[in-house]
Image (cartoon, rainbow, N blue to C red; front, side):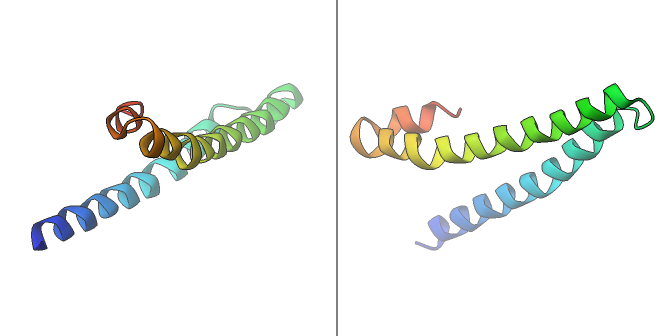
Length: 84
């Protein structure tokens, strides 16, 4: 129905807004916490970005494999309830 299509595209729009506003800000705020003139903090800054990207990709992998498997084979409500 038209309502379902509207809810679907509204949800996609909200997800795009959330990702577009969160990811750039987290990286900028995270980078601002470290002093580039201190060699130790500079290495911590690189470590921060490595861990930040790693956790993003692990989250994507988890949501597109484990949660889909749970929704298809165990229970849709459990697969939906875990992220909430």
